[in-house]
Each structure stands twice: as C-alpha cells, then as structure tokens.
Length: 216
Image 1 (tube, helix red, strand yellow):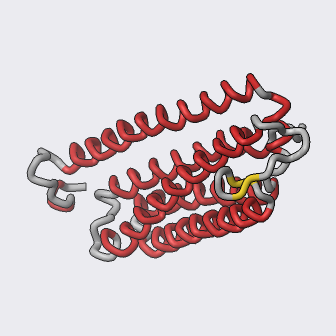
Image 2 (cartoon, helix red, strand yellow):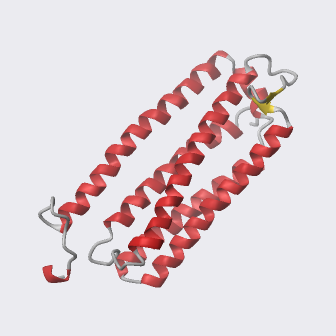
C-alpha cells in the first residue's frame, strides 16, 4: 500500500507503523503490571488454601457452578468474536467488523448479568463477608478467607471487564464511526483485543480456583 494511503501519524511518531508498535508495546507493559497484581492475588489464595485445604474445599462447594461455567463459555466465545472483528478490520470488511464487535460487547454485558445474578444468590446464601455471612457446617472460620478471595478477585475482574466493554464501545461509537479504523491502520483495535484477551485469561485462572475446588 502506498504511503499516501496511510493515515498520518501523531506528531510524536515518525511513521504510522511506529505509532502502532508503540501502542502495542504500551498495552503489553500495562498488562505485565496487571499480571503481577492478579498473580499476587492468586498466589495468596494458594498460600491460604495450602493451610486450610478442607475448609476451602467445603466453602467452594457453595459457589454457583453453573454461573461460573456459563461465564467461562461466554468469555471464550467473546475472545473468538474479538479476533474475528480484528480480522475483519484487516480485510477491510467494515460491516463484519462492527457486527463482531457488537456481539463481543453483548457477550461482555451477558457475563456481567450472570455474575450479578450469582452475586444475588451468594447474598441469599449468606456468603458475603461483613455484609451477610454465615459459617456453613464443615468450613470453619477459615471459610471466610475463601469468600474474601472470591469477592475481591471476581469484583476486580468485573471492573476490568467493564473497562474492556467501554473500550469496545469507544471503538464502535468514535473511531470506527469516524473512519479511523481501516485496513491500513487498525492498531487501536488490536490493542483493545489484547486487553480483552487478558481479561478472558484471568477468568481462565479464576474459574478452577473458585468453582472446581472440592468438586472433583
């Protein structure tokens, strides 16, 4: 593609390719920090689980397995639709790109709806530390440690997912609408896709820690 067909880079970049590479480098640097954050959280979980294996197994049995499994499938599907939207952008298929992004956004909202309903069930089951918590038979006092991890980890994950939905909406309502995502330059969409994949990967780790413990 001739240089004249490429969009002009921002003033601080020499070429549009350099601008795209810098954007991708930036998101990877950001996600390294996020990985360290979630990694420390999961490490703490395994540390306490090693101390209280029976209590954690008993507490985990009270999680709503079907909600976690459904959300697992939702996020896996959303990763596929996000990749398809980026592929459509690279091929210049604007309508397909918009369609796949809308589906990705809808799947994100579906995840939050399922998680919200699960939170409601947790509240009814009195599994909310400080607010509404009741020690179940067999889990002992250490069971609250599992539920503390559950709420902190899933809450932070939900916040990151909401940020991802916001980024997808920004792509749809601003950059794509103004014609700023083209086959010549779609790095911003790739950056959003990388972030979205990270959020999905975090759930891949949280799902077995939360829902599969004590069920095998």
